[in-house]
Image (tube, rainbow over all chains, first blue to last red; front, side, top):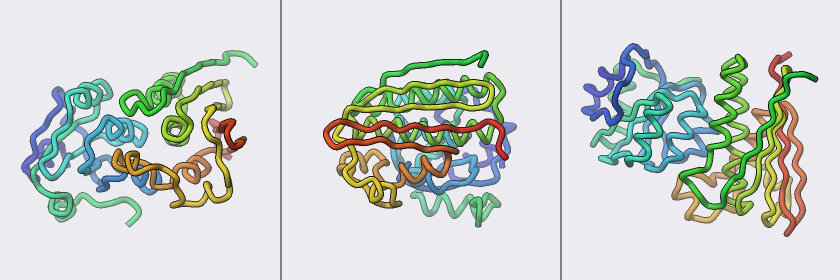
Length: 115
Length: 143
């Protein structure tokens, strides 16, 4: 699924500019705890989180995560947007809670890895 | 040994904005020299966890990295409180991180076991009130 399709599906605003819409995202994980993303996540291209701090972008970088969705109406900070753009990571923000955003994506074909 | 890349980094204490900078830099170097993506990822995860640990528990510290054609050796050391019971600290879920760190999304007690999982050789030297040194080796060619 393309970033633009994900954005439409979960009514998300794309916060970073110049993103590559040819990236095909097929798996995702949802977590507020970056420790768990680091320890349990397989190769997922998308992270859904309610945590807002620069370490979310760092964790995404280390885990090869291409895009991060901030849920529950949370918005990434300016320094996070800057860091993400530098690393080529796309940031999105949706008002949906984590469960609903995850469910909508899962229903449309994005699955978790290792399930 | 030819073509050895050596880098040194300072890991500041309790600075969540800068933490991970060293790991990010090493990740770039490994990608540039053509190390396989899965090895780059393993190395990044191991180093980032150790860097976060030094920031959270060790009052900051230093990272010394040596890369040759076969492997990367990362030494992360701090002069923090040390680890009282290393076996206990290695257990998944055991953490002494304060709530303020958990609120930042870390401190789940997965760090050390995750470093072990992603490194080929892990050596931890620690002494109470003196500090901790974590030595991570990852080989580029996996058997």
